Image 1 (cartoon, rainbow over the protein chains, first blue to last red):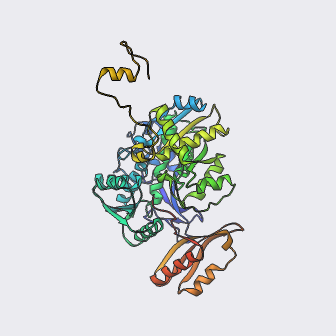
Image 2 (tube, rainbow over the protein chains, first blue to last red; image 1 turned 120 degrees about the vertical axis):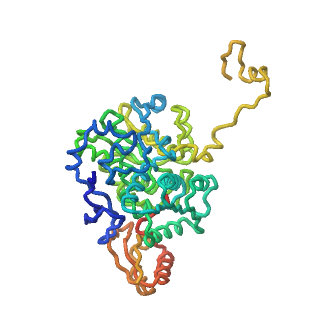
Image 3 (cartoon, each protein chain N blue to C red; image 1 turned 60 degrees about the vertical axis):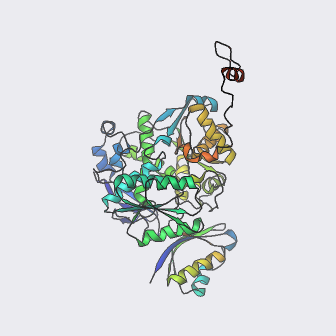
Length: 416
Length: 79
């Protein structure tokens, strides 16, 4: 394998060896992985992919690893659901849900990026893996580290909800609660990553970690019968997911798996943390940092590392961006659950809410083949919908009470 | 001597002020700007501060007091 050529600065183009580095020493720009597409093209085919493992590792030729010892063997190949009911509700003929609520092992798309990060970290000789997180990322890193037998450090803000802390502790990593605000936690983690010889998945391993998101593009294309969608609706936190889906679609073209990329990329944020969408709607190519205030905590990144690149990718694709209120997030979660039986976390509500807006304002048209990316399971953010789902119907333990409540005759029928 | 990389962002009303010059004079740090984009309505810089750790910390507090947003070079890493 080893199809990586180098790490390359996204700003000045300076190249570096494929080690655990993430910032260009020349201009301080972020580094990303550069591949030998001509080499990959010689060895990749649709058949080879289809004969590969039922996981992200079927696309290993296009991932930043040397192989063949892949960690996180169950991540990816989540269902692409033909959402007929939701499509009919919204007025779309061909709507699909890329359902990462059932990604393994921790029920969010983070299992894709962490599987790639931990595999590369092991290849680079690291024994300790770490991350700074308020939720999904910590869960995924802790679970993967446990399975891989690696030491794990998870840094969390001191005021994180108990349920989220438990989700990390069950895997027995070293969980460090940091006193102080978000900025303090952020800063300390950056410094620790610089000082200790650890693989910090979203800091010094970030060039590799971020590439895992491309597998959402690869799978979508394969599951659609080797064609790209007309429209993609993607939630944005750091903006990396959107950027990498765009990159992944083009890589499939570079290596000859598809002939064209015809996808318009659309970004979704919550109003309470929408630096990227706000910039897009204002016609700016730069964003202004914000202090997040939204129930969509997994998207609450006020100064997003890939915000600029997300704006660029969306503009290149001639796509769009929008944002929704917290009430619309909850409505989006309910709508997806009640039409398709898929319970998404708050980020999913953001995606569905923005999808609805983009259909209403004519950005996404009735006949567009559309894919909405649902990135995490609703069981992780139940508190967001607890007041919006009603209560069970309470009855006495008798058949009469039951039939009276539901107005049933002897032969059944007659919903209340 | 320790050095650290930061991404700093200026609010619109501070763009014309010589803040980097001031920081270099008010604190014992060497400022080294590597990449920047300063326009009428926004301005950001990627820069390195070199000096004693305590002086770097004081310089960061000083920048924040002037209304500048200071983040690590990676921006937000808590996901």
